[in-house]
Each structure stands twice: as C-alpha cells, then as structure tokens.
Image (tube, rainbow, N blue to C red; front, side):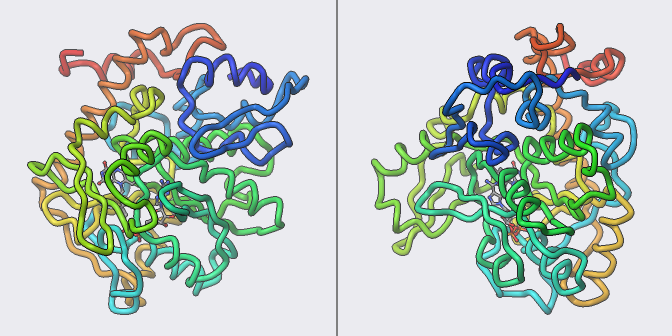
Length: 373
Ligand SMILES: Cc1cc2nc3c(=O)[nH]c(=O)nc-3n(C[C@H](O)[C@H](O)[C@H](O)COP(=O)(O)OP(=O)(O)OC[C@H]3O[C@@H](n4cnc5c(N)ncnc54)[C@H](O)[C@@H]3O)c2cc1C
C-alpha cells in the first residue's frame, strides 16, 4: 500500500463515508480529532505521508500483509482466520463477580493476569461517559475492571494505544473490535518499531458483527430514556431481535431493525467477524452468553490462556461442535457479504487510492465460492 497524507485520508475514507471512528488517525498530530463518534480533520495538513493514513483500516488494507505480522501466517479464506485452539471460557475463581462483565469476563480476566504477571504495563481500553465510548489508558487491574462490559458503538480506542506509546509505556495491551485491531495491525506493518518487538505486547480482539454510530444511537436512546440512567447494553441472542439498554429501573428495548439504521457504512465492507489479527479473540458463546468463545491465535496468546487456567483466572471447557460450527458459519457469511459488497462498490482490488481492501483474487474466489454472492 502506498502511504499518503491526511488530505488523501479525508478523500479516500471520510468523504466516501467509510470512516468507522477507530481512532487510528487520532492523537498523532494536532489535526485529526474524534468528537462524539465522528473523526474530523481540523486544519489542512500539507504532509504527503502520515501515520494517520498508514494506520487506517479503511484505506487500501493488504489483508495478507497484516496477517503475516500477526498471527504470522498468510491470509486465507478461513472464516475465523488462523487459530491454534477454540474453547469456551469464563472468569475463574480469582475473577468471578469482580465487575459487571459483558459475558463470561474472559477479556477482563486475561488482562488482570497480564497485569499481575508483569506481561503488560498499560492497556488501551474502552470506557463510557453517558453513552459515548471513551478510550482509556489503564495501568492496573482496577482500571481493567472499570472498563468491563461492551459499548456496542464505534469507538476511537486505537487513540489510547498512541497515548500509551507517547506516555512511554513499553508493554501495552490493546482490546478492540476487528477494525480497531486491523488498524493496530496496519501500525505494525508500516511503522518501524511496531513489529513483534515493539511496545504492543498483547492484542485481544472482540468478535463483532457491527458497531453502531455513537451519535445516532445517542439520539435514538435519548428519545426513550435518561442517558445517565444507562448502566449497560446488550444484544440478546435470537429470537429477541432487540437492542437492550439496562437501566437502574430495568431494561429498555429498541427493535434491532431500528438500531441497524445506525450501522456505519464502513462496517458493511468489513470481512472480519472474529478480529483475526490478534493474539486472542473473544466473543459471546452461542446459546449461553454467560460464557465466552475464546480463540487462541498465537503462541503468546495461548501461553497467557494456559497460565490463566493454571492460576485460577479462567475456567475453560471444550466448545460444543455445533457452537463451533455456528461461529464459523456466521464468520463465513460476514466475510462473503463484505467481500461481495466491497467488490460491487469498486473498493476491492481496485486502483491505489480507490480500494479499501486488497486480497489475493484466488482467496476472494474461495470466499465467495458456494455462497451465491
Ligand atoms: C461493538 C461490539 C460489537 C460486538 N459484537 C459481537 C458479536 O456480534 N458477537 C459476539 O459474540 N460478540 C460481540 N462482541 C463482543 C462481546 O460483546 C464481548 O465483548 C465479548 O464476548 C467479551 O466478553 P467479556 O465478558 O469477556 O468482556 P469484559 O470482560 O466485560 O470486557 C469487555 C472489554 O471490551 C472492551 N470494549 C467495550 N466496548 C468496546 C468498544 N466499543 N470498542 C473496543 N473495545 C470495547 C472494554 O475495554 C473491555 O476491556 C461485540 C463487542 C463490541 C464492543
């Protein structure tokens, strides 16, 4: 990929409506800022090349190059990417009930062990102010627990990685959705020092079908409830078909159909459901959301998982084959839909500057083969 500057980023991504507010371009210079769910360039920047463009997951991303950085293998049509192990997990005896985890608490438990064992000295996480997601650099287990639970919105979380690097942290963990993880992967590809020996020590990806536009969700929610009363949110499994806000007085449900109007355009060309470019990926377990599905992708991720079991941070059990098959099916559907859409929109394997995705044509054929796309 040809790295360009801030103006190119605006024309290739923002003006096409593809920005997903991941924060990859935010906090690196005085120009790019995220405000209430939107990234804007405040002043013109004259540079021909910039990290803003290099980190963006919606400029032309060479999926093979990112995959070769982490997990360290070529990009293929595998629905959930490369992995060593897939199991179901939840918080172990050391972590049970310590925070309002979204599902089994696997993410917070892995981070807690990473801090307790000295593997990391900071983590780039996502908190919330009212309904708006807020990137946070946390430096201890209390910070991890304060950020537990999902904010189902696009969040400029990658800016917290920049903030942690600027503050001099050397062993940084990052938790994020597939687009945010792709931005961190781009960072590793483009910037010397962000390789496996760089300051990013651990990446935990979150499964994601979509992340809502924070402004649009705020305006929907404020018509129904006091935003300050919101204590959490959830997308209950089918057949519920609602987006559920938890409040001090119970829950307020909005039909999923309405909420889907707040899905950013950039999500629709995202082929990654399980955050493939990470050490470990975590999602809800189909059929029992008090557990997680956990995917170990790298040796480092697998070692952390094994240590978490041994030290009582996690408990694990084999995943039912039907649950594993369901996860792979859902991932394959997202991948094929996104590739087909990107191709229709001229965003796949097009000219430099016009593409959002570059993928080996034979891999695209295999992804689309048999799906009717
Ligand atoms: C936008 C979004 C969409 C998701 N879609 C799916 C899905 O379709 N299917 C599925 O199985 N799982 C999905 N998940 C993942 C799921 O909601 C849980 O995060 C996951 O199961 C881990 O649960 P846990 O109990 O281990 O997390 P916890 O221990 O509660 O930790 C949650 C972690 O998520 C981080 N986080 C919260 N919100 C965001 C955000 N907006 N951006 C980046 N990081 C964030 C926090 O920093 C925290 O560390 C989604 C998550 C998000 C944020």
